[in-house]
Length: 351
Image (tube, rainbow, N blue to C red; front, top):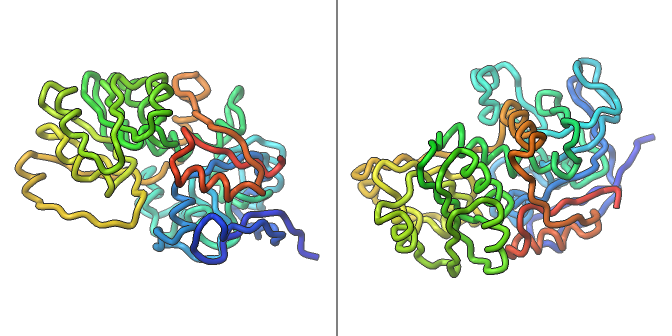
């Protein structure tokens, strides 16, 4: 007899109302999988654009959303080593990688051609009581780190660590601009930028979030209307030069304002894209000013381990707005989509 679990299922793209709580089969396990009893799952904007149809590539519905997972090992596959039932664990954003390609063998498994993003394909995601994840995407949770904190470390902190440290290579004394500063990515990007020794300028459209953005390390907070050109304020804050690095968590809606905010030789790191809109660009606007455009795509296992260490030491503080049950997943998505949450909302199957 097939065992079942409670899970939030999206059968076709749409608004928050297309998310239904169902009883579905517990995910099948591969030989290198761990079956994890989910304690906490963060709600990411990636989940929103998966659900509403903005993100299409790699999506195979019906899906159980959710890739920011922490919990307790329920069962292990026959080829798993280093984990046992009862272990407290958290995951990267991937359900599977090949483990042997040039990317996997160089800690760049985020680019593995065989990768499966957790919560994008089929009925195996974090908005559920159980999830199956390959051991290559699982880390032990350090002592003193809670399930809620661990759940959001991979995406909300690890991806920003990827952007700030590994791609952006932020140096002490540089000026860094963080867009979407009040969101789940941005508020942790601010902390990481400050930890790297940078002068951090944050951009937000939410007056209510100014205080917490300052509290998380921003040296200046620019409050702007959505669609407003904030480049003049950035230039003023940097003595007319612009910023050395941008950690861009927004994408198209702030593209032109961000471009105008760049200093000569700046590095522009794309982390998020909140709409499906395209942008117009004259390449000369970049190469004549020696601008580099790069991207930080999710989190490797090594980056997750490093991020967990930062959290365990208290160097980075995970910012959590609140907890909701699976029954309130639609409300969580509405809050995230409207920009009402600061940091992350956590879904708790046990509530």
